[in-house]
Image 1 (cartoon, rainbow, N blue to C red):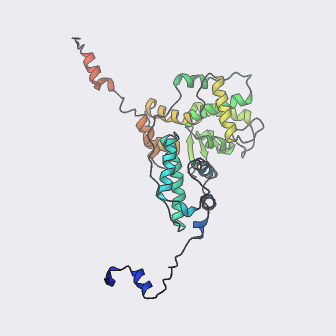
Image 2: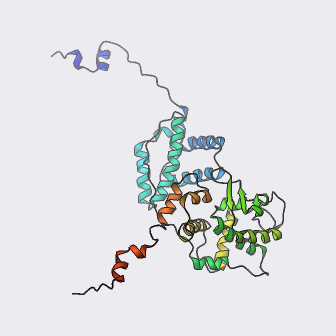
Image 3: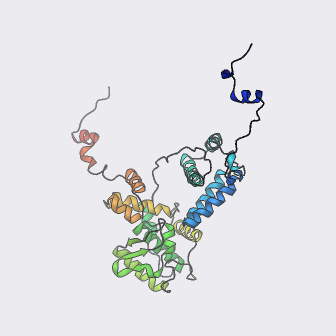
Amino acid sequence: MIQKLDTLPKSQILCEAGCHIMKKITMKNSSENSTVTEVFERFIKASLAKGVSERTIKTYRSHLKCVSRHLDIDMQYCELSNDVTNGMIVSMRESGLAHNSISSYTRVLRTFFNWCSDEGLSVPKIPNLKDIETVKETYTDEELNRLLKKPNKKTSFCEYRDWVIVNFLLNSGCRAATVRNIQNRDVYLENHQIISRHNKNGKIQVIPLCEAMVSILRSYMEIRGGTDTEYLFCNEHGEMLSENALRLTIARYNERRGVTKTSIHLFRHTFARKYLVDCGGDAFTLQRLLGHSTLDMTKHYCNIFDADITKNYEMFSPLAQMKGHNAKIDIK
């Protein structure tokens, strides 16, 4: 039986006609044959050239290390696929990683893949996992009172400095990196402010000082001394505190005061809560005080520390209204 030509595959028709089929030449990016790690290193180099901070680069590297427990980063980049990235996320979930941790890791991977796309590389899809909103832990007023108690005159410089830092953290809600980078020349006591030149978003930030903080800093700076370009909160030799040194010294200070919470960043959460709830502050001013580039994170603080919803609630609560009228409920 003779089969019609139009029902045969084109390749079969050409073969039967004696034609030699040539394989189509396609353009390939040389990076496709590199490993994921090698491509990632080029991404790091490009990020540094772009001016991305060392702290962010450190985060990129640490996140890739965590990802490597669930993804073979020594595989060729061209082997990455949707199935591979989906398998990575499933592995993360099965290992018990928290949702927000997975979200943080995939956020860095999306940044990496966006760069890969700009470089002409094929990019697998990766889910956009939004963080689950959590209630931020803060210091209680009782804990703050312990931490704010002024040490006696016989104390060491480090203990005194730590007390000043704790006061400053509650005054400003600054990040630890900001505290470490403040120099003597940045402090303007007569104007009740500090001009911070080293911030996460790369912008200069004005940090206001209350009268009590001005008085504390004036006394501290007389003892601290040093040149204009030396760091305000230094070690006992006048040198800049490292990130780890600041973390440890505050943790030990807290423990000596009987406070088990030791996180520096908790002071930032505490500042936001007290500013909104106890002091009646507004979101826009809080954004500027915390140095947020957008209102997104500030809105998060407003949602979990909502002062407006509790104001005068005694007047509007149905339970309070019923109790006020001495309503009697019979148990039947």
